[in-house]
Image (cartoon, rainbow, N blue to C red; front, side, top):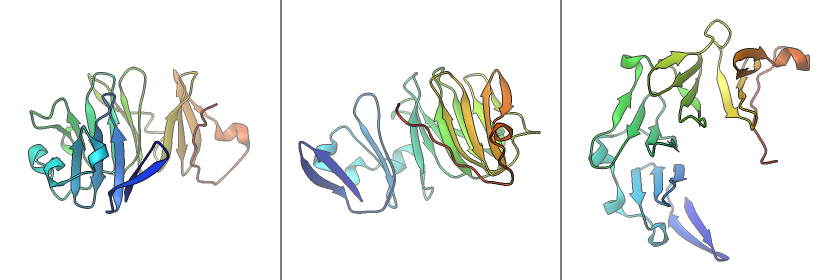
Length: 193
């Protein structure tokens, strides 16, 4: 379910299994659960069928597992195999899928960087979507399952894979070699400090 903790009180928003919840820069709530995708500017009142936007977006029977916002204000709805870019709720989303070059593998992790690019980790590598192109990054080296991706304060993009840990800052660096670990699967994360 989804619960709102505010002023020391807990309020149930929905008792359905939640896939993801996201608040955009304007404070609007974007929620994906088993019943669909919801958008509301007043989460305090919970969510209702009138907040459901599946028909508006023409997204049916596709679970949305992650929601991101880029600095241009676009909202990105990420499913297992498709990505939907929303510029506004007044038009249909732009759809990114294998027809335009998105890997035909399950999307396992997503980050946005300071430039507004999106990085997608798959079960077969990593891709970067800029405002100009969609590129496979280092396919000869980053070709196993990408479990996690994050960007640190110094601008390095870290990639935890089933075959090791790498980071990208200008060039690709194999960090696993520095750790002296072999034959391990890695999930990495960043702390606030």
